[in-house]
Amino acid sequence: MAVKKRLNAKEKYRCMTRDLDWEPSYQRHEDIYPHERFEGIKITDWDKWEDPFRLTMDTYWKYQAEKEKKLYAIFDAFSQNNGHTTLSDARYVNALKLFLSGVTPLEYQAYQGFARVGRQFSGAGARVACQMQAIDELRHVQTQIHAMSHYNKHFNGLHDFAHMHDRVWFLSVPKSFFEDARTAGPFEFLTAISFSFEYVLTNLLFVPFMSGAAFNGDMATVTFGFSAQSDEARHMTLGLEVIKFLLEQHEDNVPIIQRWIDKWFWRGYRLLTLVGMMMDYMLPNKVMSWSEAWGVYFEEAGGALFKDLERYGIRPPKYVEEANIGKEHITHQAWSIFYQYSQATNFHTWMPTDEELDWLSEKYPDTFDSLYRPRFEHWRALQEKGERFYNPTLPMLCQICQIPLAFSEPDDPTTLSHRSAEHAGERYHFCSDGCCDIFQYEPEKYIQAWLPVHQILQGNCGGADVESVVRDYYNITPGEDNFEYLGSTEHRRWQDWHPNDKGSTPASPADPDRRQTA
Amino acid sequence: MPVTAIGPYAAQALDSQDRFHGLQLVYLCWEKHLMFCAPFTLPLPPHMLFADFIEQVAKPAIAQHPDAQWVDFAQVQWRLDEQPWTPDPGASLQANGIGHKSLLHMATPGLNGLAGTCN
Image (tube, rainbow over all chains, first blue to last red; front, side, top):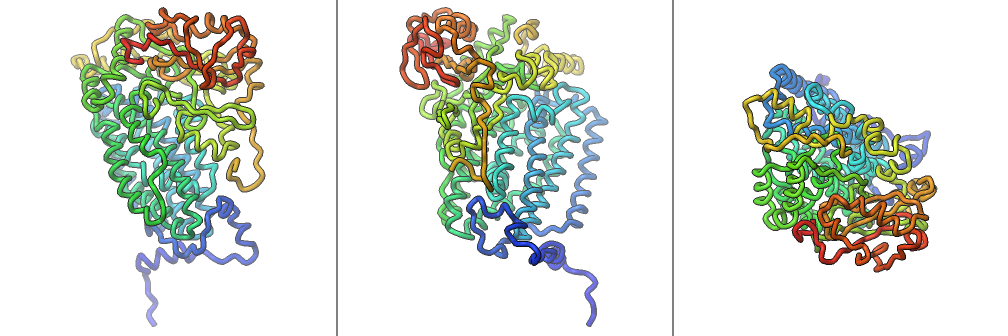
């Protein structure tokens, strides 16, 4: 009988993945996979796991290496052509600062999380899929850093993003989101990250940033986006397979998964506030409004998904109505936070131009002019008098999402939403019912939250005043990396590069008191 | 269930009062003045008189708002931890029942933010 020289793709996949697995005989199954049971999830037959994609390591390396060759060729071209000078406006780079310090470290956390759960499942198919995604995530970290490293030569605030991710007050929002997932069991991690984040909400993260890059002349970042697209498609397939597999394995899994979907929908929604703010306020050339994006990518696409999951006994996430109401408000509320606490951020903030204010009025006809425009016009008037508004106090934070309590009640946009709970004689405060519910289910986890404001006041972040915390603990240079954009060194440098361009930045006097208001 | 964990799980609250070097946290929210994006977090001595809190802490915290100059603190309607409440200006925060991480709401009827827009 002739020996076949080559295996076909399907055989090769089987040999190189599931066939490498074996039944242990020296150790007990539960000792090898200790994390598989404590969450209450019941797996009756791992063989029912359908591999969401069939890719072996050697194919993976070959495929990714080709993509990277193209990617780095474009980075080089962008850099050699001084691509940063042909952006729509230097204000755009502030969106990249938010991305690099807020999102890129999450890719690293995703790598860590998938590497862990890729060890913990006794099903070989699930292990392989998770390990493969772990490598993808690591690659995303590296390529994002390289895509944005060019900007670090010409703009402020990009110099120490990983350090900032661990320390800066608002970066605790994305950081704690992922740490919450990574400290959960492996099945919750997958429901949180693979399903709720990568499958349900990922379009609301990647489309805005990557289209934002395309609309604003940032060829480096948009090319990263294209290069990651096929990976993201694989991650989404994994997310859907995870949820269907768990739901089909045992009916007792349904209420557990439902609770995780409720929790991680809400956590993801809160996290995406930062993305929505970026879309509505930080992109000089707008892609679409947050409200429109939420409508398309969540209300329409998510609606169809949850209809499909109905047959398993899964309903749409709890508080989804609140998110649908919130789409008209949260980005304006978030920009208000960052504008008034810009003395402590790693990027600049500014008031929208007249044109941008009109765009916001048009996109938010029911809320912007009545609720938010008056605040912005007041601040702009102050700025024109040389009295740019900064809030010298520290804000109250939500114990769960760690965002300042800046969101309004769903039924009353003129009242800040607040919930509280007591645990072991101590008070805890929340921005919403969604966050309060998460706390009440696992209070012992969240009483340990590292809330930046409280940590500063306990003296754990260096000095007692904001300026020294920002300078010494965050490694942000006050007056260079933060405060108002107009009149900043970055703004002036941009004007030097474009002497004839009146640009989209509003004519307004530079603020000479910038340093004194800290 | 206090936490989903693989084994015994002992957690310590990270923000208990003993960690604030003799101070306690008080949160202050001025209703219908959303120009201040969120309530303030204020570290205060528990023995501070409420009258001193008004003069030395609350007034400076809200001073940048155009409505601030019109606030008559004798007329403010207070809520302490979401309950209607009347402070005694001559008593300390502690004696007034303001605990660690208590939230104070101050309502100033008639003052509704920038041009009445609750900002």
